[in-house]
Length: 125
Image (cartoon, rainbow, N blue to C red; front, side, top):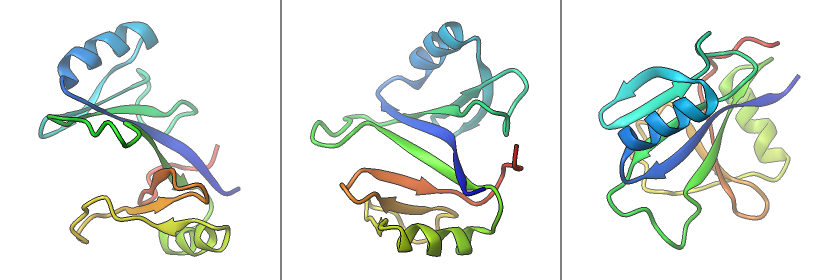
């Protein structure tokens, strides 16, 4: 095993509007709220085969930056070991304004596409 996509994060101006829309489109339900951010996903909840969708409130999504990014979780090792593996594969640390207190690592793939390595919350399938 390695990592698998656990979340897709979409920057948006109106998380409520998009949560209603995508819940109807995908037959998802609201799973969590963190401030103005809303996480929606399958009715069976987190950790299944389908990734969740986080609608992240941004007053002005950056036009020169991709508004969608992938979050991955290691499935067979801890976060530190997976970080080392990803860096060895060509990922590089990325600065998107994080504080250093986050529980995740922001990385860029070899072409500069940003993604996050989360602390493990998924079990292997």
